Every structure is written in C-alpha cells, then in structure tokens.
Length: 144
Image (cartoon, rainbow, N blue to C red; front, top):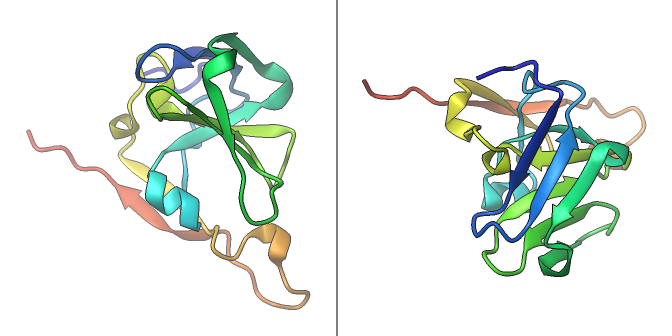
C-alpha cells in the first residue's frame, strides 16, 4: 500500500457512486471517531479536500444525512447504504473519505488507527476546560 498517494478513485459497494479525491496527507493519517454516528458506522477515514473531490458517477443515488448542529454532511449510497465520505464540521473545507471505498485500500491495511475525541467535539469546547484530541487507539493484528 502506497501511503503517499495524493489522489485516489473509489466508490460504494454496488458501484453506483464513483468519485475521485485529492488526499493532501495521502494515507498517512487514518482515523476513526467516537461520536455517536461514527461509533455505529465504524469507518476509518483519511482527509480529502472539498475542492479536490469529484463525483464521477451516481449523483442521483448519493444521499445526505445530517444531525445535531447539521454542519457536517454525511453522504452514502441510497442503493447499497455504504457511507462514502463526509464534509467535516471541524473544517468544512475538508472531507473525511472512507478508506474502505478507495480502490485497492482496506481499513485492515492499517495496523493502528487513532480514534478522535468526537463525543466532546472541538467546536463545542468550553473556554478554560481541558480538551483532548484523541479518545484512544484501534489496533488490528492479523492472524497468520
């Protein structure tokens, strides 16, 4: 796996939604989040740029889910249900791209994945309160 790729194509499980994404950090900073939605969907994401994302196919099948502050925009295929990407609340110029949707990449390619503290989102910080960025570390150790 090339950790330094800066552009990748990918899509959903059924192939209806296809996209190309610019990845400024490549695959070097995968992460998960412990917010209520991310705990349930369990995706590992890498950073993409909003202005570097091109939907190649399936615009009519791409569905949007928003909750809480409704700032973040979570996209998924309305046919197969797979989450492909989201526009971040913490930085709306960035996307979180589901690595499992990138061609040739699997979340199991990463031995360790930091878990961001999303329960206490950085945008909800109370002045003077100590804030932590990470909630933990997810490890994958394959059996031989």
